[in-house]
Structure formats: structure tokens, C-alpha cells
Length: 249
Image (cartoon, one colour):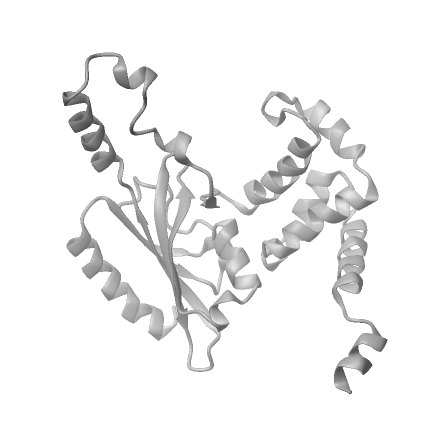
């Protein structure tokens, strides 16, 4: 562990005691993104454990270098594995050159306060009124902008990107057998697969060890094919010679 992360380890222990059990506090070490969680308190909130990987959102922040012009990101919505909606914030831990070493993440679960508020409102209304005239909605109802989902592994992140593409085509991924899922994936066009791999790249998936092998298995194609897709994406993203010449004038 980098000495700077050791300093934050002490801070996390302090914050845990100050904030209480409604706050999950996590320290991520980016030296090994697939086993990045080196410290976690009140893990019942997101249901994660030490040595689990970065979330897809954290990977994306790292890949897009959001930390270069920000020191932290506050108060975005995330979703725990039990589908509970959390309020999350991330602080970027950088070295003296401004490169990212780790992330200190705080996830707040307001379930107890939410239930208390519903109970107070219910005191002033007859039974059944709130069922037909909801004043306070459940978390799942108000969720309109979830930024982060806590995946168990890089495999889950990869599968979720593929599932998003299948959903766009009106496919119910929850009811798909392995063979039907394989059939739909094999029917994807070159452009659709290119879009899937670009989204994975934008999420930082290819920062992870063995990602190319894992993606090739899930897309049912060869590893050289994945490298060709990545090469094509790099070509599309790179400025042309003419554009570079014009910009330099």
C-alpha cells in the first residue's frame, strides 16, 4: 500500500466512528483494480467485501481522468446489490504528480430516515390512503439517475454492458437461457459489437487484467477480433492528419 493511502486508512476509521452505521466508508487502492477494496466499514450497506473490484463507475472516473480537474464528486445516486438506493460521494487520492492512487468513497443509506418519514406522514392519514395517494415513494420509484451500481466483478460489468445493448433491442435479458443469449449475441452486427466494446472501453474495462479474454468469451468471438475492434475504435477516436495540421496553424 502506498504511504499516502495508509494515512487515509486512519482517517476512514475515524470517520466511521463519527458518522455511524448509516454510512459505508471504503478505501480503494488502484494498484490492483480487480482487488481494489483494501478497507471497508459498515459493508452491510452495499454488501461488498474487502478485495473486491472497483465499480464500473469508479473505473470510468479513472479511465476518463475525471480526477485531473476535480478533487472529489459529491452526492450522486448509487445502487446496492439489494437494490437499495444510496447517496454516494468519492474523494480522489492523488500522488505529488497528480496521478490517481486511490479513492475514498462514502455511501449513505437513508432507509431508516425514509421509513421514519413515511411513518410520520401515515399518522395523519387513514389506512390505505397513502397506497392510492403516495406522498413518499419507495427508493425504486424515485430512482431516475443512478450513476453507480456495485458489481461483484469485472465479469458482471462486462455482462451489464452487453445486457444494455440487448435491452435496446427489446430483449428481456432476465428470462434468457444461455443458448438464447448466445444466439442473440451472435446476431449482433459489427456496428453493434463495436458500440458494446466502445462502451466497455469508456468504462475502463480494459484496465483490468484478462479483460480481453473475458470479453471475447461473453461476445462469443476470438481475442484477435476484440483487438481489431479496439484498433478500429482507436482509429475513429484519433484526429486525422488534416485535423491535427489545421489545429496547429
